[in-house]
Every structure is written in structure tokens, then in C-alpha cells.
Amino acid sequence: MINYYPIVTDETRAGWEEYTRLHSAYYNETIEIGARLRAIQDEKYGYVAPEGDRDLESTEEMKGNDPSCHPYIYELNPETGEAEPSKPGSGPFLPLWQTSPAIPLQVRLHLNYNEL
Image 1: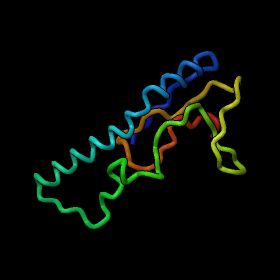
Image 2 (image 1 turned 30 degrees about the vertical axis):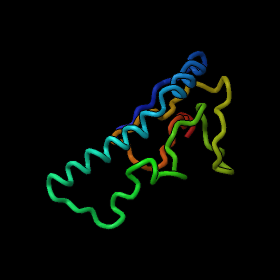
Image 3 (image 1 turned 90 degrees about the vertical axis):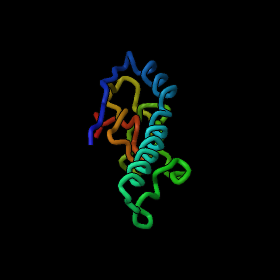
């Protein structure tokens, strides 16, 4: 797996968060494209997936496990595990932005890995 963590400074944070809000739909689109391509490949080679093998390959089946992007760079509260915005002035930040391959599970897009 390959992950992309851009360096975001306090000065560029607002612009980065706006950009990601406008461009986060790619993740679900990528998962749907991958599912279609696997279906074509399965048909071509006669592969029949075992029951449940492809259960998370569409956004419909992922309801409640949404991998969409948080609206801000965040960190996890160590006591509650809840997402909280990273504090202003605490940058630079290393938010997760892309993964390859895109997996149909909840991915912590925008989690500040500089705080872990």
C-alpha cells in the first residue's frame, strides 16, 4: 500500500482544507471503478468470488462505513478516540490524502499523522 501525506503548514492549512472538501469524492469513485474492473476481470477469467468476498465493493454496501474526507485536518483524542480538529498553530501537518490501492474500508483521510 502506498499512502500520500502532503506537508501542510499553518499558512496553507485553510486552502488545503478547502481543496480537500472540493475534491474528496475521488475516493468513492475510485472504489466503484475498481469494483467494475474486477467484475470484468472475474468474468474474463471465470472467477467466482466466494460468498462475501466482494461485499464492500460499492458505496451502497459501504453505508455506515463512509471513507469520505473529514472537513478539517484532525487528530484522534487519545482518551475518547474521537476526531478533533488539530489545534491552530500546531503545524506543520501530515494529513493522509491518498492511498493506493483505494480500499473499501473507512480510511482516515485528513488524519494528521504528524501527531501520532
